[in-house]
Length: 465
Ligand SMILES: *[C@@H]1O[C@H](CO)[C@@H](O)[C@H](O)[C@H]1NC(C)=O
Image (cartoon, rainbow, N blue to C red; front, side, top):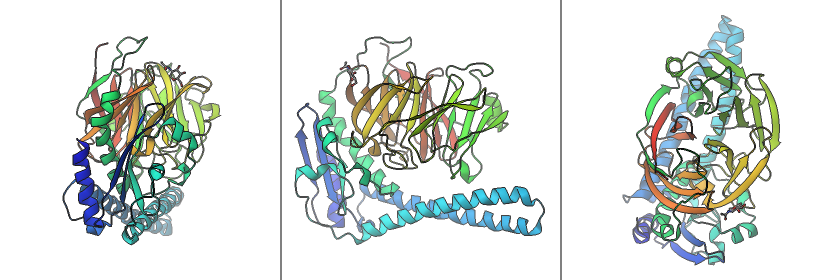
């Protein structure tokens, strides 16, 4: 999409909301990167009566809030039922455990709902302030009732900024609005300066991503704790596990410790677990992965990376990821504390995150899978909060522009072999409109994802090198 038509979309939003023009600027940093800044006053949602991308995104926010309210009602019903069972003392101990869990989930949900409501009120109450003061300000989001819609920070600016930790607004719908507009701009602009992704040493079967198929659904979670989650296969299993085994973690809740194991895809589809591990430390969000017999995951409310060996059922390594944002400082656009995301590809184990030094741009580190030591680190120019998810294939990071749009696209590639980025527009379907986890599996050469209770898999095609 051309910049001009994007401006038109943004204008329809802004003019409707406030009768003001957005500002758009392009500057070049010393290292030759382009910086696009796109700022509009915050819209009041009721004012958006024009059709277009912006309106759809605002509706998305409303839908999300409605869904959260629905979850709350359902939870309250279950709590009442449980309270009844407790009073009747039929199976009191089971019900008591379940009740504690439900109460914790409800508290979490209430907090999220409240944050969404506050953001909403803030949007409604904002009085459409004037244009921003200078291009210097353009890096920052959510200040004084304004939003920056697009920005690729240069490394230079990244070092000077310290405001990243203030990015704490929760409105998922509003973030979505951001990302959908963001992702279209560079497609026409950044492509001209991108390099083709040549790599020096390529493992067999490697190439650049060219195509992603339709999602195929293998399982659907049957309770609210499975709205978000992660499911995994080990590309390099060690005995007693094989390539057939599947693992799953439901990640809604405050004390997530259950890792479910399935013998094979058939058992997985039937919902027959072969084993349940109780993890010594609780899991944060959907960034976990399984590799060489260990589950790698982020410890809840920390930047601590854990390696849990399944055979011994112990945590073999704990390592803090230096400077990594966590607990909602640099999540993907859907939120959910997706600050730290493990990935596995043909080259090994990676972690995708951000730091305030990188100013919220995606940072990729290659990890030693035995020790979790960082071997090498790359700073990209892709803002983490602006993308819905990311994964790595053959040392190339790919980002997705939306977690909820059924016609999403894979919009950027960052090649760690050449340190270059490239705009893309590869179709990616979020069939169930809330994709909370997307991981590549190098043994299957497929993408596994968790889309709104549904565990899905995508075929892919890589170019021949
Ligand atoms: C790419 O960046 C990494 C990390 O900063 C650096 O070690 C490497 O030499 C760079 N490679 C190229 C090809 O520029």
